[in-house]
Length: 229
Length: 221
Image (tube, rainbow over all chains, first blue to last red):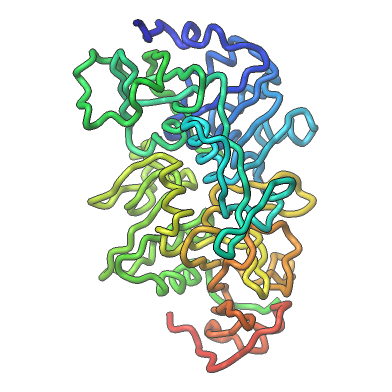
């Protein structure tokens, strides 16, 4: 078994037009920027992206430069007021990219459920709002809940701090965010990490994402990402 | 529009007076983040950031100390208090949705007399940014809205019914503005406090919902 690839480009070599890709990270924390840049170079098109945010300084926004995204599923993409528009906001305003706006906790749980083999779940979030439109609702103990469907993907791009060659991952600070649930929810999960060590060098007590969820690894230094106001 | 009232910092200070020792508190983006600067010194308030931190401290202003993996949900670099913990987004929202977060302080565009909150989209401007607001409004045990009492051109933000898309219905417990502290009760809005130099009539004139005014106090700041 060899999960280690020599470059981000090699690790994403079979990403295909029309694929659904989950991108971990929360603005600057834990963003799989090297894999995103490789996807930009590769030029794969007609993609459905799943991410917490796009266009807030994250490198995901450059996928709009070559119109690689057909649709985004995200919690934060269009701001009511902005000093300047992201590429995504410009494409969205022209109707050239689709957006499914999802409450952040619902997004995280849809992904977790997808990875855990749960097809749908009820949540109180969004009841009585536009998020409820077209969704089945049910009252439990006097409160209304929405039925939300799980999300899975062809690929997940995640960023962790360290991996061992079996794919066990540990993270740095607040970078777990969407990386951890997304790693569980894709057919092929690709992790970029600062360092790859031999099995046994990570304390099993400290492993956050067990290697069963991680199919490919690539060593790549963290790229500088800043919040874009 | 009524002139005067509190600065944004004083609104944050008044909100901070609602917080008690041992509470887990989530501060929304914008004005609510200022509450972190006014936490009571003699109490342990644990700040929750929905991107995966329990126990962050202040906002880091020194650019050279910026750590891109240590940010709050507004993308601002933060410090940690001793005993802080990190976790993933699904666990973080289990804390919120599961009712483990005592208080959330959210910004507002509109609040209705029933406590409906609208704070994520303006009609006609397209899009909107939900982020964690809907989960926080639906899941936190108490929702405090901190906002300017009126819009920039003087229009009311507190209304009988919201006209903007809702974040959650019937979720707001307390509204703190530059003019007043208003409690949402099953019988409607109750004016509890006015800002120094602001009258009950001023507040009612700036509000498009009926306020019950009983034993109204001047805010102690």
